[in-house]
Length: 78
Image (cartoon, rainbow, N blue to C red; front, side, top):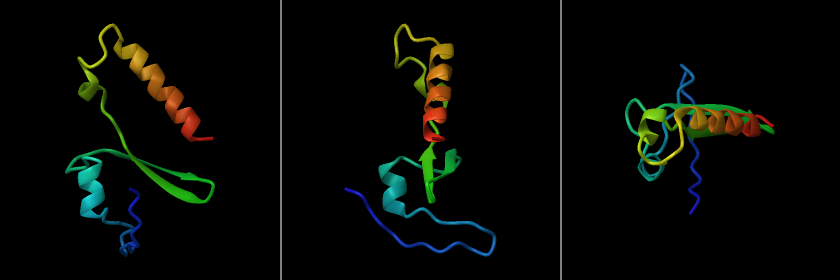
């Protein structure tokens, strides 16, 4: 279920991601997020670190994963 919340930007440009959303997306301290503008909307997505994927895709190399991430970034920028 999509959760819609209204939040306020601080004087320093900071926002707080609501707890339920952080928990659902497994966002904790030191989690990297990617932020982009898309058609007038702000999109924030958790970044999956390559080290977290190690061992999950037998036969897929780190180079393959990097290439997939680069392709994903290109698609998101459209």
